[in-house]
Picture 1 (cartoon, rainbow, N blue to C red):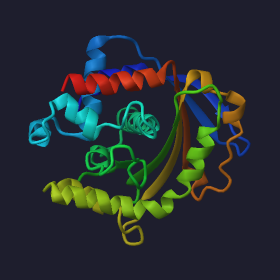
Picture 2 (cartoon, rainbow, N blue to C red):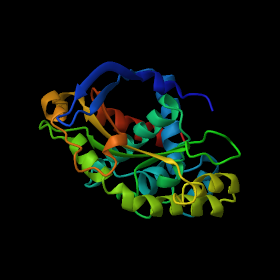
Picture 3 (tube, one colour):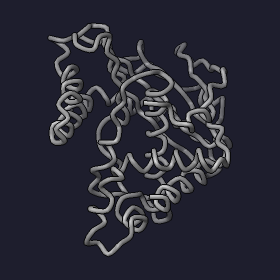
Length: 272
């Protein structure tokens, strides 16, 4: 699958911060522009996390709504009424992190299934935020196969900086308990869709005792640039994390990110 054009806007600054525990924090920047073609492609990519385009007409049928109205009223988190805006920010952060591990790091990252079956558009989906999978060989199990479980947190508006990276680390520590349930949910959805090959890829990681693999954890904070406090981020501690030896830390900053999020949702609906 070709790399989406908007990934050219996600840039490694080369800057690294060190935590008191000796962990390294990568600093990335989402340097978006007003390029209409790239924004349209990104909006489509975004929309397809919530709904396959070829299902839109059937889903909207009987509701009395157009495609755009269906997406705005029944699929996408609310733009203004709480908790809709915070859910928008959280979903956006998760999708950016999923793009990062898929297109920057090269993992298989099945994420559409996380958003397309929400019962409440204004709630976050339960379970691990982002999962990535790496296979050494296509047809054989290897102990060097990797399961990458990422927790993301967002802070895209306001004026008070908070350490969302610490929040992501703390929630990532809970992923050991959520991992099995998330894998089961992904596998079940693939089986329901008759995508047996994808289900088998998930199944490979369901019995670590008999089929060992490498587990990598990740914690990410996606922050509007005015909320990026280097000293605060640098205070992040990972001492209590169950997988602190294999924990990747990243921060993604960018200008006017909440405005970007709302513009992407609007474009995703209007161009459906």
